[in-house]
Length: 414
Image (tube, rainbow, N blue to C red; front, side, top):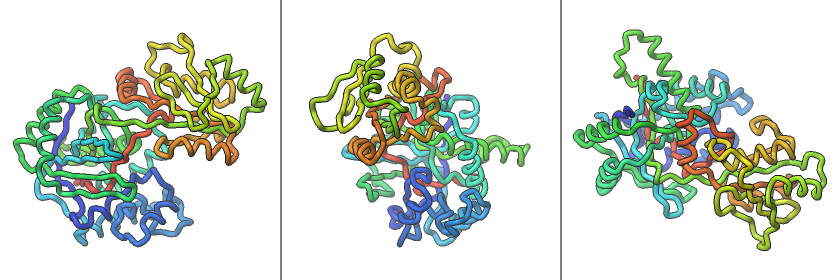
């Protein structure tokens, strides 16, 4: 059973919501963030990437960065840019991108559910990235960025949320990328109680995006427990900020690959090697090839697209990780032919999120990369199957869009 509970959000005044709302801290670098906030003192990037308000030469992990994040958050609250609700509530967060909607419940999830694997993971985390967000949460004494969770859709939860969206939203904004963000506040305690009860029938929740933020939020909760050994379990530090979506509304985009060289092979030798692993067919259409189903991979080489068909029996179909197309590409081509043993660390490979389009693959090859691969998107059921099996996905397997905005809800830990 999953534990969720309402909370008193610290959130923007409605007239400032569009200026406050910001992309997650980890989808841009510091220089890009500095450009994004020009002329906008209210952007939540001043909290989530506080180095933008300091000397550009400062180390990103210097204590001054975390102190500045806390100072900026406290100033936004003191100036009433952010105002705390007077009673605990659930919230509904709907995003609309290219006409497609996804609607989630904004709530606090339990750190114990994470520790007990009720909240399931599908990625490993990096110690340096985790340490950074631990310090950020600890210094701010708040969860500033929501964790993107998924669950297998439950009809009664969906019905309650759908009915509540007939109310007037508290925010209805459109970000610069054309994505709509519509927020409702559920201030009916009976409805909130019923939602809590219904989530207790949800067996598992799954981290879709935000593994580092989630692990860091849990670690800070554990630190607070050590500081307060008489804790009751009801304190806010026992919970973290999440937006929880039903699986049937989520959309995973392709996550594509480009490689710098052919590992010393000529084009002919490379094509021969690929042909021994896959059924390879040149595309007659000169446009980019987007795989239309699982076990089809696109390849762009020397100005031409090819279709790679995965051969039946060439992978263990009963293994939820090994049957992924990203695993098949890695195991049958990237490692044995191109010599890329660890895509996490090899500088010869780069990853292109599907939001940038297949033309970006062509552009990268024309600019000097040797070969590109277009992938069929990993499906949400694949993610949940892997998490249920206690396994982890290969790196760069999923690209979720749209991204949750930070700054629309902050969960204070004390």
